[in-house]
Length: 273
Length: 253
Image 1 (cartoon, each protein chain N blue to C red):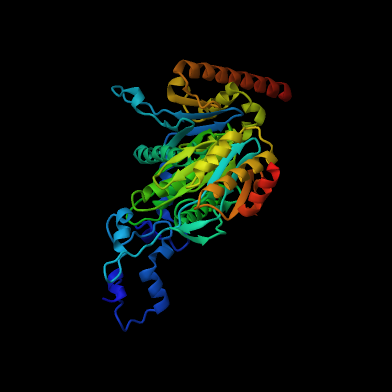
Image 2 (image 1 turned 60 degrees about the vertical axis):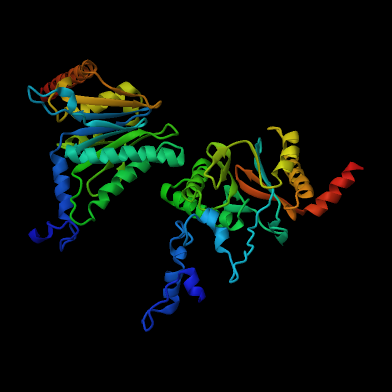
């Protein structure tokens, strides 16, 4: 059977005077115009059934492993909020990329991290950017971190059970000071001082919890975040690549460092001597 | 002109939306309401229409609370006001739920004004026949007073009046509103009551006065308290009249 039938597309009636490119866009890509309310896959229970749809002509499973596996962390301290992430994307045992940007710049005062489905995180955090900018224009003041994280968590809750995979931290600076929220695709939204998300989070927590204090200096905080991610990349197969450190200050965010974890490995090894 | 005031979605040849203007006329028939923004309080005062003998007094409430920190008084069709108040109250809570912050006065005023505007541009609907005075404190403790009208426009005011004889009251306020005159709660209340007394029959029984303070505590003045202020205002008026008489006598000599 032709591909169009399998996907459920309706072939357009021939002989129309409609401009074909626009028509195709409308017909097959409704998500372009309604980007905040995207259509669901054309079958029930997408969360559980997506795997079942992936079969080739002979009925064998087509393995489609989403890019999971990551280590991200964030913590509040006297100097604002610190975010540190790795940059490896894996699909099963295959390393898809070693240089993914897992910190998404929503705006100058809001950052989001990425863990889980890379596409889900990137897409919805970009929708969040749009909503935050509209809020600014309508209310003539910057959106609070609480409100921004709530927009994202309400979106996630809307699609609950439908297969989204997101474990995100929303970090920012607003009238109330530094803000850090953990938001995930189950619809959970938790404020907190210290989070780590991803397959490598267990290793990062060990280092983070051992060294965390509220009154860390900026340099100490950068070093703590960097070290925690490095240790996760060392032990977790699904984490690696470049360790990126961002600092959210009252004046906006600043990129502190982006170093390959291999570099850090030899640096820390030398320190031990 | 007469052909253009049926379907409200239509403009007249000279650019009027007659239904909106007729709604503004309905507002002018409503009982007077005045709002004054003080240094650390906001005061709303309304004229209470005399009730029939058998009618219970307190069922007519023209000052309503939209949220802990937002008050509203209106002039015009009471039934229309009920609809707007209901929706505004829901919006205040909805905003708190999604943004985790209480509404700013500007936001809720904009919401009410947008509602009103929508009804000036919908098929088969007439505009709301009320003007509102929305007042209260923002989260940063700044006092605010806004006025909306049936066309859906809104503006911020230091002090304003709506309803019957609003022009007279507003002119009085323009002459008598100074930052010194509203420095304390007492003075602000006195100014509001004095302004209302310009057009309302004297007597505390004919006025309803609400005060909201910085800490978002609302208090409706008792009749006795209003009468006290009214007495002071009357006395001052008499003294003023007496001194003027003396001056004109000495001049004419």
